[in-house]
Amino acid sequence: MPDRNNRYDYYSSMRLFKILDENIKIGYIPIVKWEDFKYNCDTYLNKAIQAKDSVPQYKVSKTV
Image 1: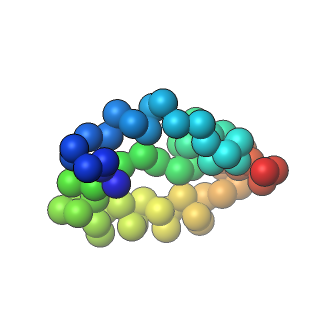
Image 2: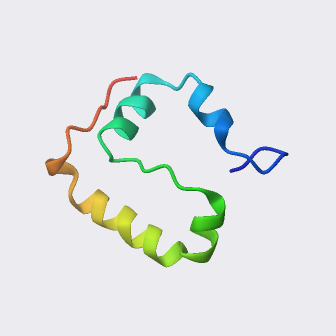
C-alpha cells in the first residue's frame, strides 16, 4: 500500500522479517504497487496461485 503521500519508496528502507525478506528476494512474494494490483487483480491473483502450486521450484524460507 502507498503511504499517505501516495509513494512506495518507504518500502526499500524498511527492515523486514527474515522470512519475508528471503521469500521476496527469490521471487516467491512479489512486490506490486497498489495501482497496478487494483486494475489487474485477476492477473496478480493468478500469479499467486501459480506460485503456490510451484512451491517445490522455489527455495522457500520457512524459518522466522
